Length: 303
Image (cartoon, rainbow, N blue to C red):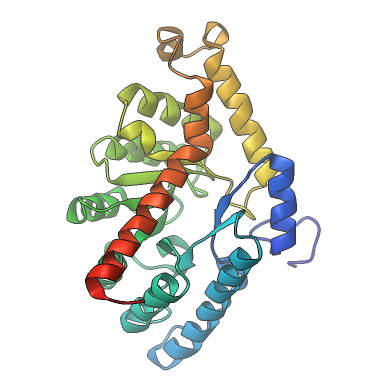
């Protein structure tokens, strides 16, 4: 099935294909982590924790080597899983990602891997990632019951002095009608908790535009807390970034825009603002994470 030309749900993409499409899309650098669709765990049980750990370690190591091959193109990020690995090995995986591989971000996907993102086990892993200076990151969509607004609220409050990345900003494959409420509540949540950072991917275009307008009007720090993404291989990089650029052209052409908030604020979007959302916000966040990791290295004396 994965080799079928009509299959795109997480279809594998190798490193050279990734770079080729980034070139087509005019994307200089991008964050990259392992693809959960092609990582098949053993049955989830305590006796299989170590086997699953070894599989995920191999996937994280692949990202590490890919970034070494393309150090100016790939920002390598890690992945851990407290359900498939158990808490102790999930923390150990995060330690390797941060200490050995130098990843600034470690992601968990409660939706795809089916565990509540605010469970005590997850929070223990989040605390561990933060203790090493990296940024805990979640798939955050309306597509499963595992990533709720209440759960993200708890995490944002509990770790209010630390950055948390919520990928998809409430999108991620939810039903159109049910998804709308989740999108809007996520948008409102981010305006209450400035430690939340969102990646705009796998979310409807009308909500992408409304998110950008809302956060730009809100000003700093909120306008610094969103970045555009493609969710490749679940989305095409060239198509998504072509759409982003067309959207920004529309937002800058306020006279022909239908949103009164843009029409009443003709200088709301500029070339400089566009670059913030297309890359600068994310690059600043990653630089901030690397600085924090270096600070923790000195404090904890690990090399």
